[in-house]
Length: 393
Image 1: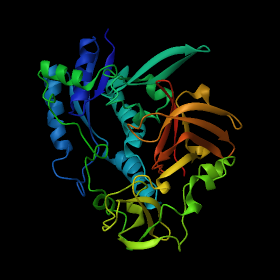
Image 2 (image 1 turned 90 degrees about the vertical axis):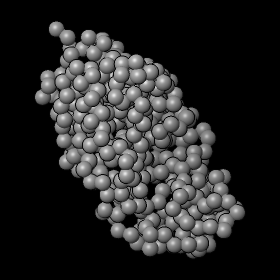
Image 3 (image 1 turned 60 degrees about the vertical axis):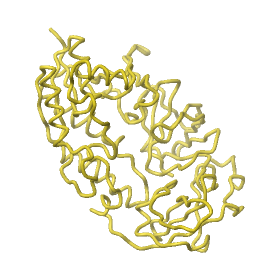
């Protein structure tokens, strides 16, 4: 009897081709479409509304002659992803809702909903791969980078567990995007030429301040420019033997900098941001280098090379350290070299991870631009994602 797979069919070309490949491989395939968002406040018109996506998904399922079902996961999505997102912005942090969406919805709530169809596996259209072998007598699942460097998506799955990986298939992880589109065209799938979705997972492309103002109030505050030549903020001032110091963000006092403008809420800004400051007349563009949510102040610096944009390291507190390869967990006092990325599509960076009783410290070989609390740092060994954690500061 063929093994049964429930594929998360989103209406996009990637999940469509994933469903096709699974059927070609002899699986008994069922398509399940997720509705995760109804409110269109702040959503830019015509950007991936689910009511359009479901039509594409149903057309693909009909073409492939596989059963098609719809499940509404909007309540857990709001509670576990969007509410978390609002809470993080309120604290002056910059969350990654796509990582949370995968951990909490696609590979948790969705997986539980799929149980109604008695699957052996669930499958998605992510550009990543899974391998499985036996380590010390135990089956271990490895989350591997996808083959397409322009679409590689393992970072978005950096919070998955061994239990979640055990039940999951990634049918297109070995492929490149042009190959996927060509298969869709050859098979006459409705999604063949459909644009990729952008913006927040399942919400679409949003005007972030408008979206956030659903729960976060505007509050006028001041923008201060920090000169690049203030010696007290240069990299050399940090004690390289003190991990807390090396991995701490730049901070500025109330009297620091020159007033250059107003803003409508420090919680609407993140380190490295250029758009939204609306301050002109400068020799080089201004970038956000720090925010102070408590005092509602935004600090900015001129140019891409401003030292306030760059840091040597970051910290992850114990409760927010996650290991996909649980047997590789580091103990206090241990350090290990890994390749690390702090955002999607960032090239992997050489770094040393230091585990202490107070958390993990990641110290990079080269200065990193725009390290933002609330984002995820993920560490790799060659092409395998080993673990990840929420950047504390």
